[in-house]
Image (cartoon, rainbow, N blue to C red; front, side, top):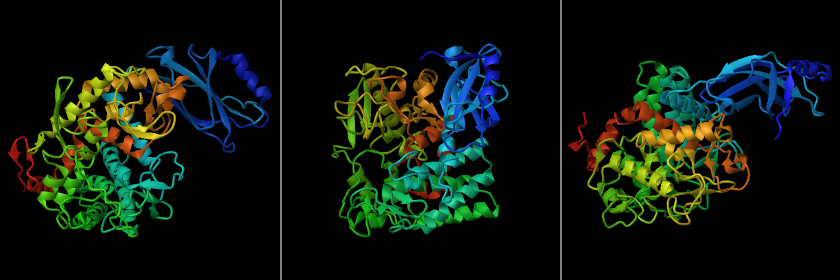
Length: 535
């Protein structure tokens, strides 16, 4: 598309065609590694469009960079060079296409970021999902930024990830510690007051009505997997917010009560395995037993760690684990790498298996009779990456810096749990896969971060970080090849696992929980090949 060039004289001519349209005010411009983010206020009615103009020659000539109906615009200017300064002017546009007076010129620069700066940038942008986009009255995280049920739908598991995001925000100074505590007091108040099912929460709630939203057939009650993700976040927060102030004490007391009320033993239905769902209308009819190796590892760990409603050790070894369990033990070799656990057919399965349970649970040195979990997660990640490099089905884009098969939004529509293998691999890559694997594969994951941001960022990177999916095999321009959605359970692991790579913050706090350490010891885990010591 031919660019529209306007000189300062042409800019001034805008004044003669404006008919009462107010120009934007309070314009800010912040420069990063490859993009500049502009924000402004406007007194015009909702839906007003704004034109963004940029100058790359010191303000002599301006180029039309884009039109938006938002009060922000992200301009990837690395197409013009590295380490440059850009001047901007913005106009409001009438319904008839007439422009307001331009704003005063404002400048910003991009510069090469270090790896640490790039990670901090991605974390801080992703944090907005859990802070700026949180449900206003409950503090819970919305399921996604756009959903057929509307943005009132909040998710329990994603909100558990959001609790950890708030901890990172407080630690990094993006919000104050008091702001974080106030937010989590809102979250825990909701968790106390909403419908619970033998201490467990449902998958979805209407944040406005504070009532359950059915997730699926016969799924309108307790979901112990989603609840375990929430408990993982809450227990991490209970350790982190250890101050003597009244609010932090209140937060810890609430979390302890919520945790001790979770009836894990009820969800065995008298058997030696955990059942995923229970409904007040359908009971255990759904009968989805949790077996094999997948994202539910943390569910069994917490069920065994409960100080009030613990499950027997046999439930872990006879149901979840076991050498005779075809969906658990693997020990096959892929690309010269041995994978201890996970589906043999699907190369261990989607990468979120290496993320969700390990946001708080520290895999470094963690082992039991079945696997060393650091080696498990590293091998799982590297095998997933090597599969994409080998690219057996010839998908566009796949390579050393373009990989990561996991669950997420499909381009252009739909949702799927992508993983290596025929049928399950469709050329769709989720940024969360490689970025959330940062602790396991720091160099390889940074390669993806830089590639996705610098080369695809103009469509793939938005106001709350990386969008959910990209598939270069879809016909059309890049904007058609990106699924511009956000999902809580994909955003959360990016922020949290990058932090665990940088500082170990969430791992260190979760692993301080005496209940968790007792549970791991009960289930015969070791840390660094030593018996777990509990004070």
